[in-house]
Amino acid sequence: MAQLMEDEVFMAFTTYAAIVTVKMMLMGPLTAYYRITRGAFSNEEDVGRKSAEEKKKLLKTHPDVERVRRCHQNDLENIVPFVVVGLLYALTGPDLSTALLHFRIFVGSRILHTIAYVCILPQPSRGLSYITGLLVTFSMAHRVLSTVLFF
Amino acid sequence: MAQLMEDEVFMAFTTYAAIVTVKMMLMGPLTAYYRITRGAFSNEEDVGRKSAEEKKKLLKTHPDVERVRRCHQNDLENIVPFVVVGLLYALTGPDLSTALLHFRIFVGSRILHTIAYVCILPQPSRGLSYITGLLVTFSMAHRVLSTVLFF
Amino acid sequence: MAQLMEDEVFMAFTTYAAIVTVKMMLMGPLTAYYRITRGAFSNEEDVGRKSAEEKKKLLKTHPDVERVRRCHQNDLENIVPFVVVGLLYALTGPDLSTALLHFRIFVGSRILHTIAYVCILPQPSRGLSYITGLLVTFSMAHRVLSTVLFF
Image 1 (cartoon, one colour):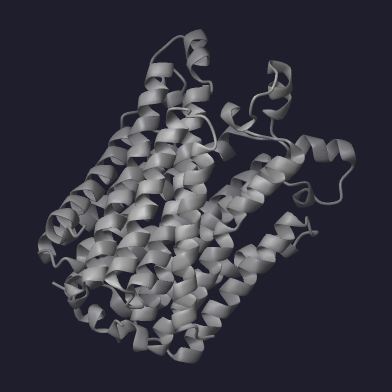
Image 2 (cartoon, chains in turn green, cyan, purple):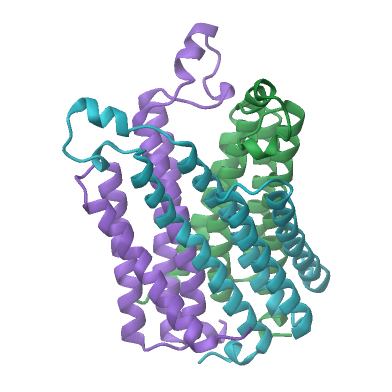
């Protein structure tokens, strides 16, 4: 195994990055589930051999499907930067406890964000979980840039 | 060259990750091609010095453009997680043959997915290629989490 | 600190990747700013305790919000591949000056792209900055694949 995987901070990063990436990927099947149960598809080839009229009825958008897709999009916009910045952050050799704090808060905030989004919890639950994740990534980016700056 | 690049599994990951990322990026020019040939733009500054009426006609959506964009979006939702999980997976020191199997099936499934999406092949071609890619990434995530778990 | 962070090319990659990723993340708060000032929201829970009529008026799309969102999407489609390919590129041990040239041009082109998009500069400013970024990433991908190819 690579030497990196003997570093505890890097192992912690690996664990949390894998978990939160799998969480993000599960939004795909969740979208498919909402598309099927709500009968709302985007592609003609997905609605099968139906009459033209029935097809037209299924090729629509549905608020629940759009909601899951917005949640998925927000994941892409936040989880991918976390993974990028988190990888670089782990390589700057931070304290294990500080690193764990960052990773745990981020992953927790993104799980709360998904629940708040999909289950339509009242605001500011979704807003706060979004901002928390953002601040964690900015905090790691600050550490990266203040340790490694090389223009 | 970094020590990582002497590891065969990491070299294989590098090769397949670069190929599939380049494939994903080519969706950008492909979208531009469809926008131009179908005359369907999103930004007023893109339709040039035309009369107000002509401009309005070009600022529309077109099913072919939307199709390529959905394909690009699906790439983002699946290829980026593959790269993240695949990088961590490569660092856990898997067998070269097992790793190659994962990388090859994933890249193959995503190329088929793009062909099925853009050329409107009948289902389940697109569905199966999507699920295959997803399962490959989940399989690598399983290996990562069962090898490195550090909470 | 990990050995990687003693390599000047890797330090340069880390610096530019962190900067351009933070730039990308700032599109989130910028979208929120436009949503609030333009009064254009996507989620019912975001418009608060208003009368049904007022809610309906705020749950709409606005051209300025859609513009920032397209800019954010273009960032995702281009900055994420840059980070992936750039990381692999940095590990192939390129000349420091060549690497710096790639990173600087890319980050500069993406900052120009955002300004051209959000401030609606006349074309081809946005088009050229998009293509410049694309070519930088392709150039790095070419170096990666010609150095490391392992099928």
